[in-house]
Length: 501
Image (tube, rainbow, N blue to C red; front, side):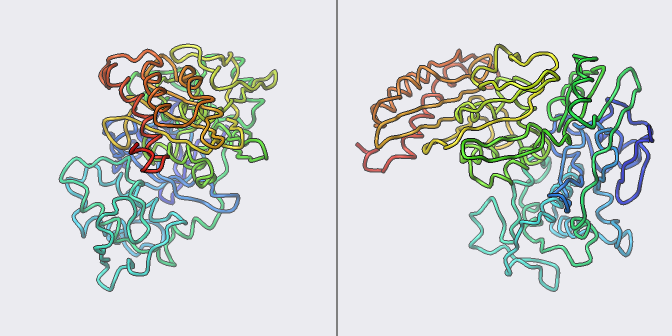
């Protein structure tokens, strides 16, 4: 095969030293690009963030921030990467001293602090800076001094700046020093990219196509297959191969538990796994679409998913994580499963022998176990239409964002007048697998949606699953939160006068 090549900061580098289990971060640092750091090695701190050129339709590119500590370096064969070092010295810069606008605002407003996490912040901020949908208000454009005022009317808005900057872009970057105010000020001071900005102009061209990659070294092998047929052949030859898309789980297993599978197969760019189709009776989501791509494409059309996305880890993780990966791991605290259970979703399982559709409620069989047979992959997730009118997702965790669930509850109710005609309730964190709260669903179905019914259902939901005591929460707390979820749903979807009764 041809040598592994990556375009980093505008220059082509060969992938010498990149083995099947080498992370992108380790390879970059081995190349002397030490701006990106390893903080947690789990994708939680963001010190390792870099920019990757990803497709934005067939003819455009979108600069996307990812955690470099998680994906294998070989997954970027033929791809383009920009690190913090490459922002200030990007093609078109007059001199090394010319800082990128993001870097300049971080420096001018005191956002760099000790500096350890700053390169990661800068890369996440740059991805948001170049986001095509960001629309700065006229009042937010920098003045002649290069500064931009954050008006009083925006003082209470902790989500989006007057320049259109979405602070959730930084939800996966943790500051270790004096706090976030100067970082927020730097973000809100950014204007629009200049007309001669090389990275902005790069977005007007197609992203690099995936390359067929195969490399064996250090007792392991990495393969990026070119088709599903090749993928199924690989799985037949090596049943214990590990499939990776964003590697947001597999990367943690490699870094923390030192997992070294004999074969790593990258499936994130396989076209049959990257479609989103809507028909009269369903929405089908390709298993290798990232959560960010799904969020952008659906644009709120599935309210339960729209509630899930901001609470699912961080933007850095969602830029790589997939529904297929989240469900394939079988984790009882995976946030996607409760929502998809409430949506009555099913999975399309594919293998060399064909396809079959399995309701998600019948997919999990035990702790991190499922009905998926050897050689099968999750090809797509199907959500039936029409959607239930009354729905909500509640995630209980120690932090509002970027945290593991203690309890996750998703509820979807169909109503005919005041009567519940169908109830679907998905629960995570209270059993060995994500579960449907069937006893509570049966109790609600056919009854009027009243305070009394909500209280009775809440009492039943508190006893669903087998809540346990662990470091995240006590069994008693979990039971209480299960019941509170239904009461909160009732309060949020009922006129105040009725709640007062």
